[in-house]
Image 1 (cartoon, rainbow, N blue to C red):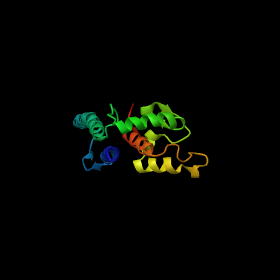
Image 2 (cartoon, rainbow, N blue to C red; image 1 turned 135 degrees about the vertical axis):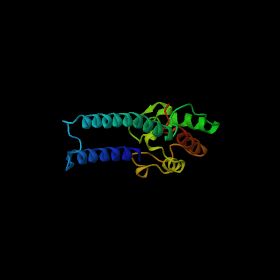
Image 3 (cartoon, one colour; image 1 turned 30 degrees about the vertical axis):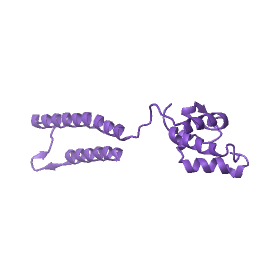
Length: 161
């Protein structure tokens, strides 16, 4: 949204510049470069635009950064999530990328980018993908371990290590 507002501001500024440049009345052009008052007005408008952009851009960036989700920092894991990390490191790092486990494989999807919900992780582990033939076999992990792995992935996916 902020990008659209930023672009719209420049469009308005550009259209305004064209209108002022092309405007000519009975007294001649609005900003005639041969007149001292016009040059002062143009210098003042240029300074105003530079100051406005110089203040608006850092403010917009600050607002954008303040509204983003917290992506980095330490994560406190529960006992189940610690167990899930251990299982993930034994059974899943061979194919998946997940920064929290220092896994950088490219066979399966990058879990940091995907940020899957718990239900999707449980479904993928239980049913596999491509019907268990090829991409991801079904039931690599079974029982309560599936829940632990899913909880771990949901907690750490997309967060910087």
